Amino acid sequence: MKIVGLTGGIGSGKTTVAAMFAQLGVAVFNSDEQAKNLIATNKQVKQQIIATFGAQSYTSDGYNRSYIAQIVFHNPDKLAQLNAIVHPALAQHFHQWVLQQQGVYVLKEAAILFESGSYKDCDYIITVTAPQQLRIARAMSRDGSTLQQIKARISHQWTDARRIALSQAVIHNTDLADTQKQVQALHQYLIQLFAPH
Image (cartoon, rainbow, N blue to C red; front, side, top):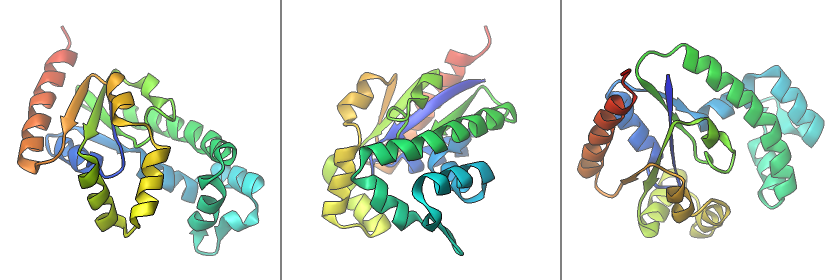
């Protein structure tokens, strides 16, 4: 089973592109959703987060995202500690998931595919891009963040140029109909590329 990584900056439209691959029958692993799920439900992950960040990490409502975000956002060392708890558990979960899938390849959607090092597990990598103004507008309308918040998040992420340099394909996501054509063409190419010879 081949693993295709799908990444891109905030507001690039990764999830939209992943959904297009899913419509073509490709199994999609959404790393961000799965990580949230692990943080909420995995006992070992919970214990490690509480041991590292304190009892306030979880409330009666579950994971205290805003509390953790305040700690890690401006502190790279604390963020690295959080990632060191979540990423190995996520990698293990992903490998279990892959074993249950059918098809020529699976798609691993991850915002920080390169930053987390998980790109090393991929056989092929696609970066989704869009002009920065469009990305900012999308992100602001999607999660109600301010311009400053979005720009801060962009500044913490890799640039498109850095991502593209390590990718085998780029999808330019500005027009949905055009994006769909790019996805279909790439899907056909990947099936041929990975077909058993």
